[in-house]
Length: 227
Image 1 (cartoon, rainbow, N blue to C red):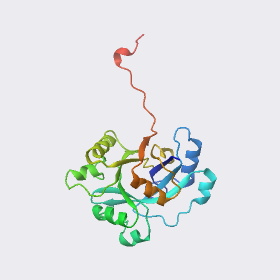
Image 2: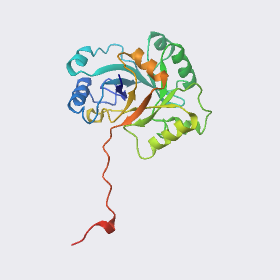
Image 3: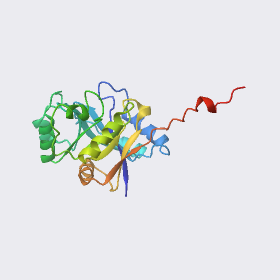
Image 4: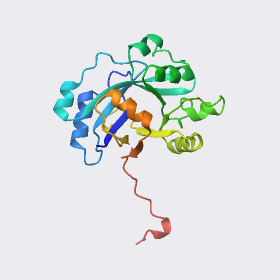
């Protein structure tokens, strides 16, 4: 059974977000026709929210909530899935200068997966760092669709995937309730836990999906009737 998850979200546990988890889940329930999500992954900035227990909200709204992290490295921002105590002892997630190659290799060794996010974004994305530093090794996937991307950023990310053969995921990068689920990832397999998510990410059997509303084309001036 396929599973669609928003892999990149920030709740009010992140310092720059004002979105309560309950409000996210209620929004998803009310708008499933336009953003058909089965769940979300909370990727709080520079931390792992150990104490977050959302089972009562999952039961209430019928939406799965998983937890991960977004950290900062010398190659830009990276999403870390499958966070465990070994990783938290090994890395200080609050450190904004983590070594990306070490993070990717060690997280994989400890049973998780590190995924560079919004690679097309200036300063904090992988594309810009690849212009100055050697490509990273052992990258499995990168985030190609990001709900907060500006014009041209997702296209840069897609070119990175084509060039290096990475798998591609999508996430909203939401910091406001109304932005949840704008981009997501559709997995071929069933996901019910963070371990399932890591397994499926490693499999490569998924695709990014874009639920952002399409803008209507502006008519050419000559096509507009004047009266």
